[in-house]
Each structure stands twice: as C-alpha cells, then as structure tokens.
Length: 535
Ligand SMILES: [Zn+2]
Image (tube, rainbow, N blue to C red; front, side, top):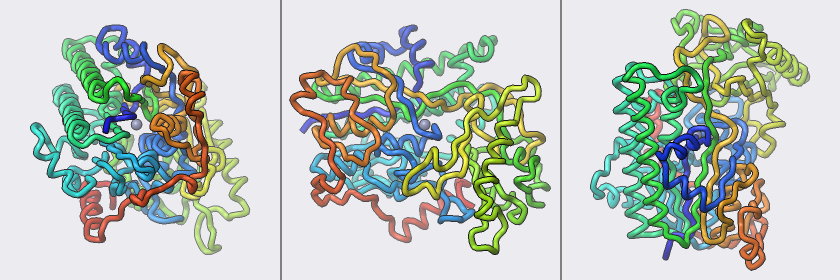
C-alpha cells in the first residue's frame, strides 16, 4: 500500500509571507512545488479562526453545519459556562471518517478537533491536546508506545504545553525568549515529521495528513520580524538576528516539506492548505467595555475591583466572563477573545433578565447600527468593518450555538473582553492576526501543471481530497471539486460523483467520534482546569 493522497496543513500560511521568502531563496522546495503544480488563494469561513476553519476543511461544511464555532463551546444551549472544544462537537462526517468508512486507511497527525480520537482505520495523533493526555489521546491503543520508542520523541514538546503556548497570544516578555521559543517549534515540527516518516514507512495509509501549526504561532508573535514593512524597519542587531531566527524556521520547514513529498512519492496527490491567511494588527477593540459604555452590558462588583485595565487577554483567562458580568443588567456580551462574537441574552422563559423575544430583532439591529457608528476618534474611520448575524454566517442545524453577531475589525485583529480604560487601545507592538484568504497549493499526476487558479474556498478541500482518493463526494458537502485544477482526460475518465452520505458504503469501522470513559474525561477536565481553560 502507498500514500495516495497527502494533505499538508500549514496553519495560518499566507502568500504575503511566503512569496517574499520564496523570492529570497529561503523556500526552494515550495517554489518548485508551486511552479510544477497548482496554486490559489483559499478563502476561509467566518470567522477566520483555527478550530472552525480546520473543521470546515475536514468536513467541506460551514460551522452552522458542522457545529464548531470557536476554541470554546457552551456547555449546553443557553448556558453561560464554556468548555474547550473537542471532536464530539463535530456533528458530521469528516474526510477521515468517510475515507476510513469506505475501506481506506487514514493517518492524521496534529489536527484539531481529533480528541477524543475517532475510531478510524489507521492512526490518529490529535493536535491541541495537553501533553500529559497524549498517550490517552492517540489511536489505536498502543500507538503512543510505539512512537515513544522513536529517537528524539519528546512528549512534552510534541503536544500542547500551555505555559509555552500562551506566549503566542500574549507576547514574549523579553527578546531573549523569542529565539528558544522559535527553536521549540522547529524541534516540534521535526518530531511530527519523524512520526509521519515512521508511519509512512512501517504502516502506510492511503490518506495521510499532517498539520504544522508553528507557522500560525510564529506569525502571531513575530509578524514585525517577518514583515517589518508593515510597521517600521528593524533597527537593532537583536531585531535583525530575530528576523534571521524566524527565516530559519521557514527554511527548515521547507526542508521538511521536501522530505514529506519525497516519502509520498511521485504518484501521490499532495494538497497543501492553510486554514486562514494572516496580516498585521495594531490595535485592540475592547468589545465588552464598548458594550458597557453603550448600556448593553454591566460589570460585576468583582470585575470592577480587579485591576485588569487594558489587559490583553490570554486563553487562560477566558472562563472569567461568568463572574465578570452582572447578569441581571447585561443584554449583550462577548465570551471569548477568539471568535469576535457577541451573544445576546434573551428572556426565553419569561422570568430571566435579557431581551424580550419580541424585541430581539429590533434590539439586534440597534446594536448593529451602534457598532457601525463607532469611529476612530482620530481619523473618523469605522472600527467594525464587517458584521454578520447568526442567520447570515451560520445557517444550519447548529446555528443556535453560534454568536448572535460576528464582527470583522478594521485591522483584522481580535477583540479584548476584559474591562479596559477605553474601547480602543493601541497594541504595545504590532502583532499578527488572521485574515480571510489563506493558501492552496497542490501537485500530482492528475493535476494541471503551473496553474495559478482563481480563488478557491476552504470548503472545496474536502471534496478535492475525496476525489483524489477515487471516492464519491457527499451532496451534503457545501464545497465542490475544482475541476479547473485537474487535467481534462482525468475528469473524463473518472467524472466527479456526488452522492448522499447515506449512500456511501460504510463498512462498519465506526466512523463517529470516540467516547472517553467517565474517568478519562475527569482526567482531561482536570488538566484543562489546571491549564486555566475551565473554571
Ligand atoms: Zn489557524
């Protein structure tokens, strides 16, 4: 058995960073890959956020259809309590379950929403897992112990260590910390590659996928070193050295991409994709402070007595919203600093605070008008440049769990949710933030060569992967197989087939998400609590 289709995820990869690196000769392999294959911009979903976007890539569906909206999930409908998202929140088939269900083997390394691991035929090494949980998280049983024997295997560096991860969102405290932090990601990606290398050689799968997320983290933290043209020229020797450290990360990544493609061989179709693009961010819109100033929200006594003025929020502090707000006087609020979403409290049972159901639409429209009217006092420019209602952004069976409004900000950044001195503040230094258009690049014997295609949708990746495996594409997938990237003779010989999911022959491998025992779940929750994710 050989690798038939190889998916390489590059979290947050964007042409505005890669193109200059390719020009400078830092990524010669990627350059030739793109020149010999197909590339295109890849438009992501709303919001352009890692967990829902990768889930859309894996399912070919939007969040309202698959059920993942954020890093966090309300514990139940109408609940104020949130928990970290997991694979059980994915409410539909994935390319992994569909391929496995039709008799193919699947290896997936470091993708989010894969924990608890789905019981597919092949291997699952889930991403976004606390490092102590990694043994428990890998599928099938015994896989972790086999991998542990690999030279250089480092459990702690391989999985999520939140103490280190938080730096990606909160900024390193001193220049000295950047270098080792970037090196950590280089080692981690080498570790991920070593696993792939072992599995492709010893226990290969027709569908093999690996996700490198260092790109996203590096760009969040080191945008000013990667793209100083977005802010100011680098001045000190230290800054210039850090730029070299960042460039070296991409150079090594290029080396890994080359090795992975060589492993898969010339007969494989290779698809590279990012979950969203990236760009600079200079400011923070303190959304809950703005809501408070406009009478939509009230802080609790506890929140007012804490000195959180102007704080940039890290993931560890997210669960605080439940005690920060005076729930009797709050009608609209943001729970997380990751999704740019606003929830409206509705008095559904007649005895609760919040907006009366009959007033919901007019209340929401007023809130939209007020947000649109909010301007930068210095320039008069609008701060909120895009607003989507739940119906507009999240139609589907799971829309009830989505925020009532989702915002796009003028510099593409994320909101802050803690109390601040004013609604708008400048970041101490320019950072990186997500953008709607990421990258797509693919190469293989069936694809056209040297084609710069029109922009594709992230929803098109799942149908493309299934087609390249010779499988039918479920009608329920909202994306399409982009026929323009394939050679005509291939399409003629093997036309794209669309079928209802229930017509897909599932051979009883069990394609749904696995379930943790109560005891295991306790262990995971304890770990997440310890990490500060959960109250
Ligand atoms: Zn991402």
